[in-house]
Amino acid sequence: MDIKLWENGTPLFDESFGQPEPTLTPFLLPTYKEGQTHGCVIVCPGGGYSGRAEHEAWPIAKMLNEGGISAFVLNYRVSPYRYPAELYDIQRAVRLVRFRAGEFGIDPDKIGVLGFSAGGHLATMGVTQYDGGLDCGDEIDKVSCRPNAGILCYAVISLGINTHGGSRDNLLGRPADPDLVRKLSGELAVKDDCPPVFMWHTAEDGAVPVQNSLNMALALREKNIPFELHVFPHGAHGLGLAPSMPDVAQWSSLCVNWLKGLGF
Image (cartoon, rainbow, N blue to C red; front, side):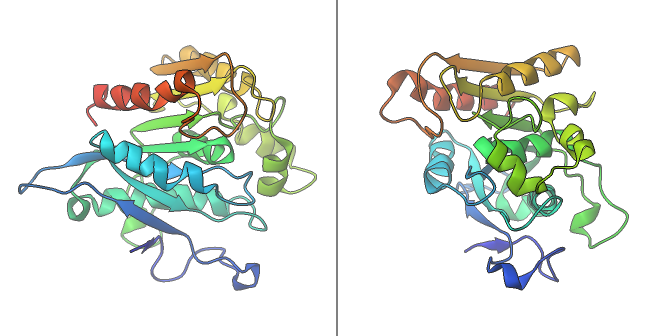
């Protein structure tokens, strides 16, 4: 059963947009004994901030489950919603999972965010635009929304040069506010305590240039933030688990191994 992010009214919700309120779909591992916990990852499918691609949603959660990691798929808001609604959704998702970690059998210090394409931009906002808890709102809002890991899959990281124009337009509208373009470009927003990041891309990606991941890697290195980056030579945009490309498909096992190395 899906879990509503807000039970007492979703901020900026507009019924006229014809979208349901944002939710999390849980894919939880069983807890076999009292006190046993797992790491978990919140999955943000791509779709240019105009939709959410199914092949980047539940199949990814199932892959994580097979690797011994619980997962949630974030059913976040898309256009005609604009920033900051989407940011609120990823921040609230992390807060909610952390607040209810005991109920879910999850370690509250092992919560990752994973996203593809525009969902990768949402995950990028998750690992760069966070706080230690708010002074307003309900009890969940008082919990930190800083993830413990970020996984960016052929992600739209920059909203400036090398961006995906459709994703930027759907998030910020046209013309985009230059201040928001800078603030929400991940490679310009890495904090000193940014969590570790795993990234993968294909060199041939014609929709979201590989420079997004390369520039993010440089920014993380500048701040001494641990990261792992894989650039595969071939493959179009939007591959998901890449079942027809065995070389690219390695990303999923590489990612699980990386998460396990972080204690997930």
